[in-house]
Image 1 (cartoon, rainbow, N blue to C red):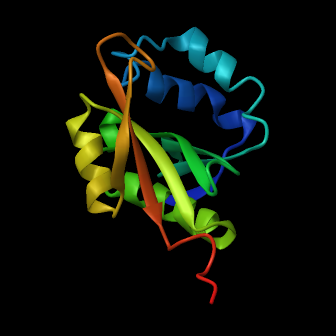
Image 2 (cartoon, rainbow, N blue to C red; image 1 turned 30 degrees about the vertical axis):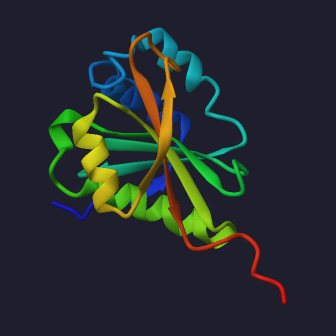
Length: 159
């Protein structure tokens, strides 16, 4: 067994990433299917940083970050395969994302579905604060909750 590594996603990872997302919640509940993910990852997301966590030669998680969002970066997608959950891989991915984001900006944003208690708890443990709900953004009757982790104001106070 080798330690999990976080590395940039390549086109060779596409099928494994789609496989881990297609049968997983919250995306299944939100109506995302294989075709949606194939479209999203073909070609690989442009203008974004995409990372996978590799666990014993198998893709166990994915993170995609969009730069320059609300005076920070936006974690557009974070997912860990069902078989790999509870092993600290999501935290490892998020730590890599935060390292890159906070080297550029002072804010990192993410969204989580209001029904996804496990993810809300995960982000809270990592220091994210809920900014507010975006009702009916993806599906009727549900809200995406905007989250923020910050290293402080973008501008320093002037005299």
